[in-house]
Length: 113
Length: 115
Image (tube, rainbow over all chains, first blue to last red; front, side, top):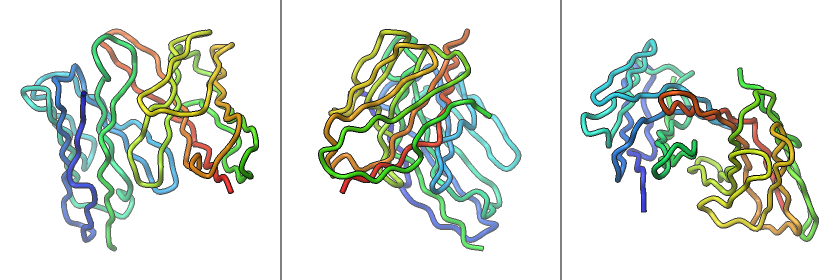
């Protein structure tokens, strides 16, 4: 069946270090979304990538969508304690425009001050 | 900020009790979802609705049921709670716009503990 895998599962960094999480899909995706969930909170949408090879930036966050539209990455430059949380990638589940998403397992980021 | 609400936020209940988790959204979204999530783990879709009077089960088998009588309301019911139902339940909604843009808005969640 369709799968979305994320690595690493956990990452501990010192404040100021960079961080990257990788997302790989078993199928080609029409788009990929990223969400952030703070500890004790709920997922919050960060961004959606649609085009092959697309790169988008949000301040210190850089998102990439692979050329084959099967992988994606999120890179955070110079992490801060406010970056702590779990980052999920998600792609459309199945074919058709149902709105359903399949989520990766998430990467939990801990930042030591 | 998305207008999607869940009540209660926390619920501790004994085995065998019937419970209903409420979810409401004021955005007029057609599609609504229920996810089950254990702490720090992935989200599992347990129920999906694409409009009024249309619901279907998600990928993760669940003993819960849902209803969608009004667009804005998508309650989840457990007829007889068990300790294995202890988890966080997240409600979400979305609207499909041109270009398959289907960002999901999540409610704050209900943390359920069954003793």
